[in-house]
Length: 253
Image (cartoon, rainbow, N blue to C red; front, side, top):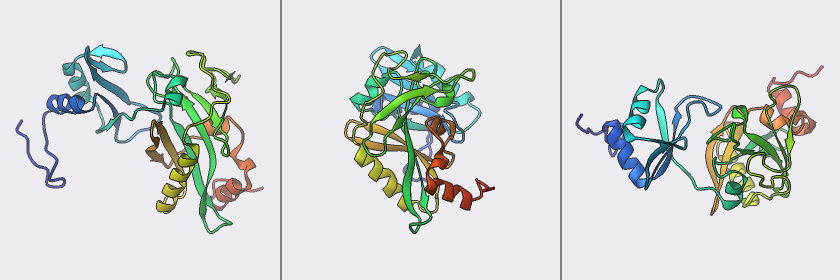
């Protein structure tokens, strides 16, 4: 197949999948492939190239096998360069990128000025593999909005009993009491983003703390409630209750 120029993106060329992957991984040794449409990390794969060859989700593979998986995937894929995480985040669990979910919405009593309703730190486990998602078995620790300190962490229960962890169940690393680096910068970043995206009132931000500061991974219009409310009801905040009620998500009796 001959490369050709896209009429929509003139500087982007079409090329065979194997050629694209080989070139991309030579420039960026760690990337993620994720479906264009999806949720809860379904279909997300970690792809690496190092001195020993290629790896997908941590397991040794070949370029041909990666190519075959990409070409057979049933949805369009996005390829994103991996962002290195701060050593504090990596210490929680180095096998996954451990992200922060920050929920913003407008304060209806203050001219729709956005505020942070809740923030949780998601942490990967042996259950969740290379991702940190709660539904895959990852942990959720609440982030104190003032100090950036973490609470104990919990995970989606397999029965009706919640488990709580002050230390990581696999790595033994402390969770409770750890302070998120660049927390003030993180709050400023998401609130600035919420102001600029005012047409999207309700956003669940996914943030990576890199060695040099916070990086927005994505902004979700579906925030995921269980990963947030395992730490207490959101409706306990009057601002949240007013917003949900005004938008019809909560009906007052």
